[in-house]
Length: 286
Image 1 (tube, rainbow, N blue to C red):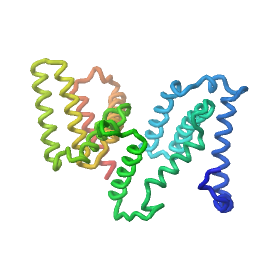
Image 2 (tube, rainbow, N blue to C red; image 1 turned 120 degrees about the vertical axis):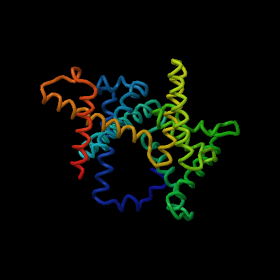
Image 3 (cartoon, rainbow, N blue to C red; image 1 turned 45 degrees about the horizontal axis):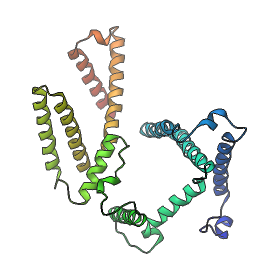
Image 4 (cartoon, rainbow, N blue to C red; image 1 turned 90 degrees about the horizontal axis):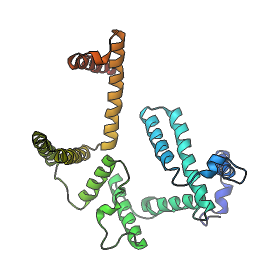
């Protein structure tokens, strides 16, 4: 039993809390059986590597349902995501690496350790103080574990396997913490204009390598602007993608109602439909 779990802890659990523990334990038992000697052939064949695509897919499906504000869908997709966590934990447990209990204990200990204003005597005034303390404690943990040494770059702490926009924003946030940042949004906006002009120049010279590089520089500069307006670039772009999908679908419907095909219409006509859809959305919001 966890050393932090006293007898009083278990005695004080109400029926809802006991049912929560039962359902989680049931999930663990089901997964163990699926991976067991007489279990499911497919489940038994899976490895950490083979499950990677499913982990990513389920995380994005949770995000999709959150953006759709579909709480029924969120519930289901969170269950599918939890299954992936339990799946990986079971595989690791079978190999003697770590267990679900150790995962839960580790994150619980981390939450207690990184919230000294709740579980300790540290005083904070606002959420910014909380974030500052969190980063200090996180840094100290990594130094004590040897993850961070004198030769470690600040940017080594940024995960390079996440989506590029998320990586760019985190890189910039790390750099900003040591003062490598624009003083205000005007500097960030000027950088966007500079990168755009360099892209135009590369295009005029028909330099493909330069154009690719400048597109990357322009995207990186736009992410900087997103930071200054307190927007997350990845989520902002996903929102725009969703908006474009919605409007494009509406255009398709308008064209279909006219008995025409999109490829037969000029850009001017399609753009007119696009503007009409935008006006319809503005009227609906009012």
